[in-house]
Length: 263
Image 1 (cartoon, rainbow, N blue to C red):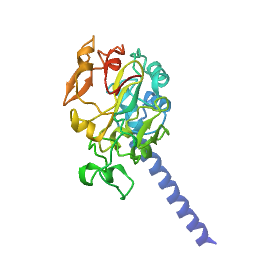
Image 2: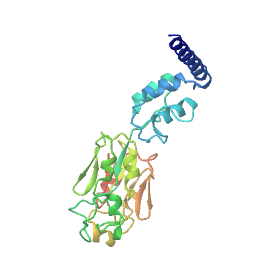
Image 3: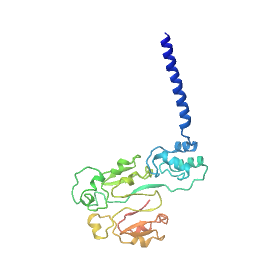
Image 4: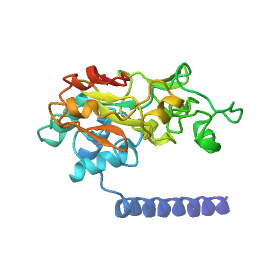
């Protein structure tokens, strides 16, 4: 009996020592929690998409509290989340323009020519590695295998007649599709009230028409007609300055190929 009591005392004593050690260590090594950071993180949607430029929502929350990121830095959360975070941080929220992804290609199966039949892996990255960067005659065009759709967490992308179509109301501007497209055909643009060029071809005139009946031919009419000077021709393609574009529609009405759309 004496042996049992001694053993129990030893085990109990060791347990007490370990408990004391862990308690002291916990106090010494504990990480201080910033209450504002916790509150900001609770407001963020938790998609961890990286669209803010940080390593997930935790990274953005820490950056906002440190003053390294703006309170409206979450593209998915939008204005509502930005307002909540601004209240936590005690600052005024800056006015933001809602952005959405836009596909710079109109080359559907009806209008774009195919050089050959592609029978490989149905993935845009893989297809872009074959001759001419894909089976389409236009080497700049959408490959239509939906790699962008696969990475969209919000179900905002579908493939329609061989070209990626973005439901701009569903789009949360996270930027995953932008990074996924091997042809660099997707850009973030203001959701409403601006002109969008639905083509990426840098060729001009006949070479464009030989492969796509709706491609930009680089005629420069849009540039000449813009009253705000918001359009500049770069590599035979209109590039729009969205700080100047008012969505007046002058370029859209004058484009002979009808590849400029006002959203």
